[in-house]
Each structure stands twice: as C-alpha cells, then as structure tokens.
Length: 297
Image (cartoon, rainbow, N blue to C red; front, side, top):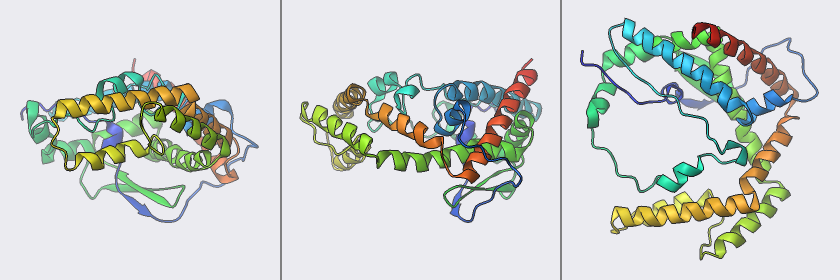
C-alpha cells in the first residue's frame, strides 16, 4: 500500500455522533465543596491544562502511529499545539488571526492534493485506525448529550494504553467540554460580561463596525460572501482587518478574559454530581500523565 499521510487531529477523528439521552455518574465518589485550581483548569481548558494535555496527546499519537506502522500502514497524525493566548480567553492564537482572519476566505485545496484526501478514505486505513464502523462505545455526558466513539483500532488501543482504559479517555475528553459549554452560557449572561461586551461594541464602532458580538462576525461575513464576486485575496485582506480589529478591541476591554474569569469562578461551584466526577477525572488525568511519561521512554 502507498504510504498514507493524513493530517487529522485524533480528537476530531474520535468525535463520533451526538444524540440526546439521559445522564450517568459513577457512584460512591466524594463530593468536594469546590473544585481545586487544577480541576478548574481542566473544566475550562485554561491555566496549565492545555500544555499538560498536549504532552499526553503527543504520546497517545506516537502509540497510534506505531500501531499503524506495525499493521503495515504508515500513517502520520497531528496534535494541535496549545493556544498561547488561551489565558486571554481567546479560542485561537493572535498569530492565526493575523494570518487567516476567521478562516472564511482561505483557498480550498483540491481533492487528493498531496495524495492525502484519497488515502484518508482508504477502507483498510480507516478500519485499522478506528476499527469497524459498527464497533462503537457510548458515553453519556452532561447536557443530555451522548457520544459514540470507536472502541477498536489503533487509536482506541493507544487511548487505553495512556489513560488506563477507553472509558477514562472518553470521559476526560468529552465531559469537561460539555460542562464548559454550560459555564459559557452562564458567563455570557452575567452582567459583568455584558458590560465588557458594551465596551467592545463601542471600540468596534470607532472603526465603523456595528456587530453585536465577536461571535456574530463570522456568520455575518459568511452571509455577505454568499453572492460576493470580490476576488478572494481582497476579501481575505478585508476579513483579516476586521478580525484584527475584533481581537484588538477584545483585548482592550478584556471581553474574552472576563468571560474566562467568570467561567473559572462558576466552575468552582458546579453542581455536586459534576464536582465529584470532575475531581475524579482530574486525578485520573494525573495518572495518565504519569503513565504517558513511562510510555514515552
């Protein structure tokens, strides 16, 4: 088989399907009065946690690649680097904003460019990496959300090696982000966030923009692009200008930072069932870190 190079983050490959369902929770877990700092970092994907997770993910990826190699299918994945501006509350780095704006005006690669797209659809590659399409495990997360994810294949084997078992990997991967979504809604409804949002609007208006919020900009631009005949390079330049202004105003009024501070504040006192589970998962992640260091030797 021709060597395959698939530049795809493992977390995306494992994302699975979402369906509404009930909730599950391990019994007999002590409920702390509040979460400690490292667990708050984990829930909000801030502080030291992104860098810690990155190191564990690199080991996970290396094990997956070795498993694929042993199966006779050379494969290379990738793990996103931690966002250096995460503690500003930003979802993407400042450098990426300056280079790509919101990513809406990027030239699309043609199918099969560099031999990657066709290889990623290879059934043998997929089954070796992710197992049979029907070999799925189920995880119920907060917010009445169910994740289905592969429980066979090289990726699943690597996850189990690093995290101790596949269920622990899935819970650490998906449950914090679901809790964080709830915290985001609560934070953006807070009067302190609304005050910062008002200052952001005032800042943006100085440049002639009248967007309601940072999140409204990509959708507004996408709609404007639908019938646009403007050359892509010109469109991209204007988009980057808006994105840089957005980022500058955001930092000036500390909008995203305020949102992050509120999420961290609210995370300490999430409902008891979630506090117990996140405390448990934080301990299990520390064990995964220790295990990954041994496996990388």
